[in-house]
Image (cartoon, rainbow over all chains, first blue to last red; front, top):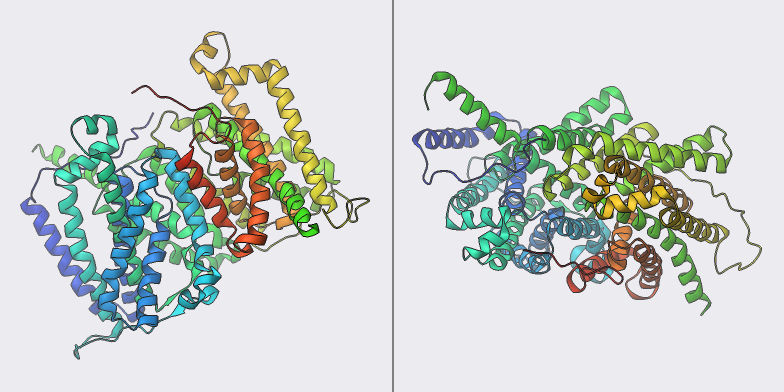
Length: 340
Length: 290
């Protein structure tokens, strides 16, 4: 019987010196990367940053708080559409549209979290699965055509580099995504390592025990749903900006499932893990596309076959994902050295 | 009036498909408290097997029954090889495993049989001898096949020793084991039966919705809605729920919301039932001790 519980997220409060150094190094790399990459690669990197934000949102809900969502593509869609509609139909600046998209998604997530309170485990999975399936159809609903553009979707102009900065448009968009991602990651890390984070983990591991300790589970769970949806919504808004286009069919079931794959591969409840997950869901389909050039049409099935096999084998052999593997490796190294 | 009768009758035909899927879901839920998200894809794969056999020149009904046998074997194999290893795992783990199965079977079908849409022949005649205009012969046949299958399943569970042992294993595994029932084997048989029931659903749906690797995704959602509406721990409630959902879907699609967003009807039913009456129309209210 494999160990199945996601690894605990509780760590000592504060950041060790080694950790701060690692974060600093990562930031420098992130800032330097677009100057070494081509335009298209920069675009891909922006997508990785966006997926990381979305995965972070889902991981707060599913990994940390234990509420299963198979339908986070819906919040990604709401964020994307709200931003696109505000910019195209109401002429709002994109800088204002992104936070508004986040707020709208917070409200949507909070509202969805209310009925979700009554649903445990597998029933919540069912309800969110239904949400994921229905999303593209709801976006095509005729009554909203004037705003959503119906089946065709909406085209929006990609933002230009402001203030005459010496950056290409792709580089500017990358930095925009990064500027959204860094405070969101900082906030999530602080949230998880705080009293609130411990309460969320307690609810995940044993709700009744948490409630007897005075944790208001209903409040925490609905708020987490809202925060999680807001993160994913901001990611959706950024995606619609960098792609310059939203359409109903890009927000189907498989988007929601990709997000699930991302947090499982990266590691449930792990914050650095979402970066691994984001790299994974960005580059594996690309890689498989290149395979299908060599192997023919049938290799189109490859990414999802890989996803599926990974989902099952990770759950069987390594339920804590890449983050857990890294942690084990680090422990092994420390052990070998004879230190603590 | 004519149009309404037509909508209700063709709703019943798809309702039969939903009832079969719901029954398959409930059979697994009763035994293991798990909701099989891969049920639809398993049914889709079975339908492809049937298509391949018919394409190879087998007569329809031979292919039909051979598909049931193969589906049974595949379903039992999935239980033995994959699901059993996650016995007692938390809900999140199991859901992720089911999603893994879903995408594996989906891409396997796409790889083996390509993503192009295929037509699937119906075993029933082209033109109707009676009821013309109200219901197509295939729809009538599908209702008949569904009802026959439900009756067979009822007889199996109610009157055969194996059916009794399976009910015992599902209701109280520990006591069942003590009186000599092999609970593990019953689970494998249950999965096999559920896969076969799903295969019937797939083969009855394919002439209506056409055959492609994503054909069952919407149907699975209606199957969930049906199972929840009827009560997820009551097979007959779930089957009845299937017919109700089929009719509701068609009427809502024709008169209320338009056919483009019919799936939202399923979403509304699922969330509505879960919130207002989680035990469904015919399920037992479960009281858990804290």
